[in-house]
Image: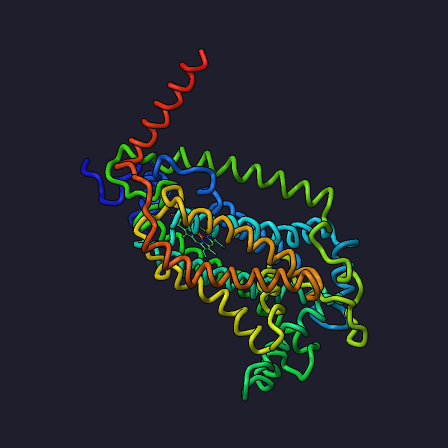
Length: 419
Ligand code: HEM
């Protein structure tokens, strides 16, 4: 008997039924089973998957936390304490959420630095990078809003300091600040809207991540050599190779986060946030979330408030145009003998900026922040376009198979030398 069109593709009739009406089965098969992954990709290529899993953990734990949280200035702090003490496994939910967000930032920072080092932002992946920077902005906004919710001293004063920045904008600044707060100072209206936005933004992030991943798959993943894939021999299929590798990375990350949750859940927290918010007592020094600290350091490095705000936003927004600032045709820093070292210095500098961003903005810390700020912009605006024009890149092998052949050859030469 002739098969109907819906029975054709798969052995499983349920899958055929779905596929005939919505070709999602073949889409998943194409993108997550047969998808050709460059065969020299290292574990840095698992950080996108790690970030995706962490985003899901944050959303799920956040939904359960929201069921027990009260967004009111008189009750927010106590409702968080109740979650910690009385709600079944509430402590676990809260620590998963707070430490999960810290891990999320660590993973995404490594993901971004990987993209910068291997030149993944260049043609034809510019839009993929732009969507990434957009995600990063949304992440920063979401974490800032979330930090306000426990209504501790740092929540209150952090929100006060950051929203005050808007008042530096000429003419519209004060009005804008009041519009954001819903009041003249940080208060109940502020807490309510921050809660509403903190709930919704992660879903927006999830949507943008969807576009981001679709964009990666259009031209395929970059690789540590930054060379274009020319033949099927240069790739392996996503399943089982990448799935197994990503699963291992997720397990290692799961162990690391569990160690923090069970043995040091407050290592990355701020002690002052265990004191209920008090508008009459300013903490001796207001600290930013460590993952926002590099930009906080830039903000405070400038004596003028408006100047600081402009530079802080410029430091983030400049990343949008990185694909056009870099004039080199060579993608991977592995083949860029000069730029590679400036890139490494940029990473160290970013880390140092983060460190001084958590210290008082005075004396040596302030001096270091200013030097760090100068290097940040010099690297992106001057060194990146300039070095790209004059640097002589190393000879890039024609294909990934050639690189692997060379590696194996030098390994066996090394081994035969040892015998
Ligand atoms: C929620 C945060 C994010 C998630 C879940 C995410 C997810 C992913 C995934 C699954 C991939 C493919 C696998 C991989 O190459 O690792 C990827 C690739 C990529 N992502 Fe992200 N990403 C996030 C944030 C960012 C940010 C903030 C940037 C840059 C500012 C960025 C830039 C890139 C680039 C350039 C690629 C292509 C890499 C390549 O092919 O070599 N991503 N991302």
